[in-house]
Length: 439
Image 1 (tube, helix red, strand yellow):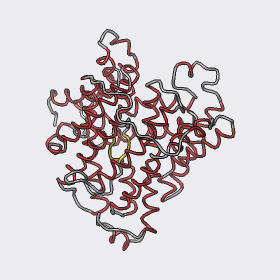
Image 2: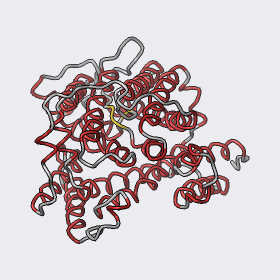
Image 3: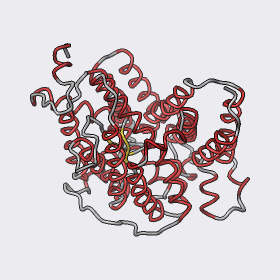
Image 4: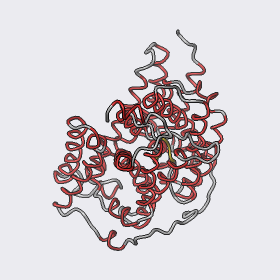
């Protein structure tokens, strides 16, 4: 894009010609597509749903459909809801640790109910989000994001080696050269495109890497198209597909992560306005974005979708192109909605062998951890802050690695204490408030 074009479209209400708007909208979809569907695949696996089965396909469909709908809440808006900025919404990795643990021990009914209630609480945060930011300085937010990435990395390795469930990891093929060849093909292609190309190719590097890995797996005879053939062309949306089952611990955990997610969204809104328009985000835009986050999460939960949040990689696209038009992202949202209404698209994604997905998430989850480290780099590494980091991570990740250490806790308390994210966040917040500042 030329400088004159960037200046022309620095206004969120500007409408580029369709010849420009459509490819720009597709670029936004390509940049977030893989990250958007992956959390649903992981949580479905934790819940014991068959890999590639109809229920997993449905969750993938809801991830695409409600990412699109939540994005419309942001770009088009309803009253005070929505920042009316080019902000792409998608399924959040931040909730994966908690929801995977809850789904594995309490079931999807408890997990999705927590998403609905947590989304409503997240929505209410829009009225007070500016006053809560002091609780989540870069030290806390960076620690939580780092814990999320570190928690997820073993999942990526298991997928890359060819398994997720115990019986898959005990199979003779687990860790085979064929599985690692497929996974590494994804990593090599994704990194090559990310660092040696520009524009749409660079922004969609992981998605293209997954496509290449899928083709390699197909050549090895690892792909089963049975579910694709059986899938219908139009999806039937089901309200409360797993019922409604309240659990206080699950709601508390999801709400805690929601607060962190809301703070991240504030950062994304601020980065979007700064990169695309050279200004500071208004209080109205910040509140509107938080309302849209919460509403998108609650509505998605009603139909089987996981929590939504703003996607930072799409903020990067705005900064790179200088195109601030929210109508461009609206086009991307419509593409996601169409994909979400066609089960065959979800079935194709669900037919992806685990090593293919594993190669992609090695990069994605590593980047989540790196993003946390990047935030921690902003803080002063004095003795106090290092103690907070050390104790929070040691306790949070340690309990996750040795869950039997808290085996006598009641069900949901044990799930939360071994989720890595919840204990890290709680301990970090308490220590940050209790320990004196060293200046």
